[in-house]
Structures are given as structure tokens and as C-alpha cells.
Amino acid sequence: MAEKEVFLTIDGLRKVEKELDFLKGEKRLMIAERIKQAREFGDITENSEYDDAKNEQAEVEQRISQLEMLLAKVKIIDEMDQHTDIVCLGCTVLLKDMECEETEKYTIVGSAEADPMENRISNESPVGRAIVGKLVGSVVEVMAPAGSIKYQIMEICN
Image (cartoon, rainbow, N blue to C red; front, side):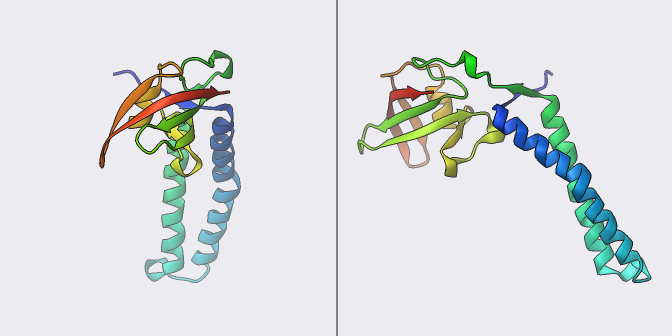
């Protein structure tokens, strides 16, 4: 089975690399110091400081592993491949809810970068799947928990 590609923007890639560098460097050193200090308290079998530090170490190592696996599968969203007439990864889209006539602007990103609070939606989300590959002016229907929602693609802003 082929590994699933992880789509990231250049900014998203930089964020992941920065987090990985921090965890592998500064964070590992901080945890090592915590473990060293906890050992100085004596018997580690009933030492909650030691246990906490070892648990944090395991969490950090797990996160490092996750980030390294993500980077091994990364595909950069190329801004040069973006168009202003068809929705694609990396573009920003102005959508109009056909029922309430409200418009909302979304940036289409890979799932690793999705942040609905920042209007960054995944190409794998229901709305993302419905609009990727569609033209400006298209009307799409998205199934949501509350029912069907129709959106019109008003503009692609790059």
C-alpha cells in the first residue's frame, strides 16, 4: 500500500520543521535536566517528579516520530500550480451560502495544516472535497450533520 501524501504549504513545512528542531534540541535538553534533577531526589521507584519527566520524554519522542513520518510523506503545495478559475490546494476561495446569502473565505490546505478557526479547511473535509476541482460560479452541495448546504464559488483569491 502506497504511503498517503501529506500536503503542506511552505509556511506549514516551516512550522513543522521548527517544531521538530525545538523538540529534538531544546526540549530534549530540558527533559534530560528534569530527569537528572529528579534522580537526585533519591529512590526513583516512588518519585513522581521522575515519573512525570519520563512520561513527558515519551510524549516528546512520540511527537518527534510523528513529525519525522509526516516529513517523509510531505508534498509541497506549489503556488505556481494555482489558478484563479478552478479550486485547488493552496488557494483561497470565497464561498456564498445559498440559503442565508452569507459569504465566507476559506483557504484549502492539506489535513495536516487544517485549522477551521483560522478558515483553513482540509481538501479532505466535506466542503474541501466538494469544491476542489470546481470552477468559479459552480454551485456545490455539502452534506453536513444539520443537513444539506449549498455553496456557490464566488471567487478564487490568490
